[in-house]
Length: 113
Length: 116
Image (cartoon, rainbow over all chains, first blue to last red; front, side):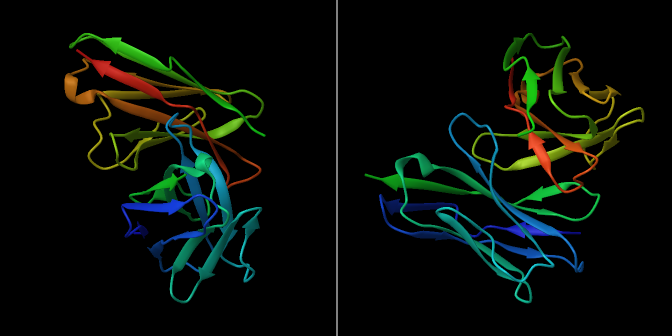
């Protein structure tokens, strides 16, 4: 079974600073996908970034980037130049092939002005 | 991008009644839809996976007779909570997957169910 662990229930960061959210996962598969989703107070799930396990290069989307360490089964999210609108729950998720997506417990991020 | 809608966004029902939640893929065909349940300040827990034209696959611990899932077309899946009780009050989220992109899931905005 695949499990996803987010060890930081809550984090805070000052506006314009950088914050890193941690995620580890457990799998015996070699090909899979990893995601970070943002869930703002509206509760709509928003895809932030995704990483294919077979790609060695870390994914980047504007201010969001990941540090994907396949051997360590680690997938952290770095948010640069944090903005007030980044305040939300962030979920790390694992997806394997044709199967469903599994989510971590989430990290509540608060960006302070 | 692909859009998934849910209806209603919020529903209040009395204990013992049934309520139906619809999940629609608006601009793509979804061969697979997923239903999640989310309690306050918790993560999404997968309830069931439904494939168009076949019976849903329920996760362990989810009562299939209580949470009826129908995926009758490539754009519509429904979740019916039967004989609802206050403990069924939760936030229900659906997601849809287009066949051509196996790993990509698109999430609906969720439905808040309150059972009084």
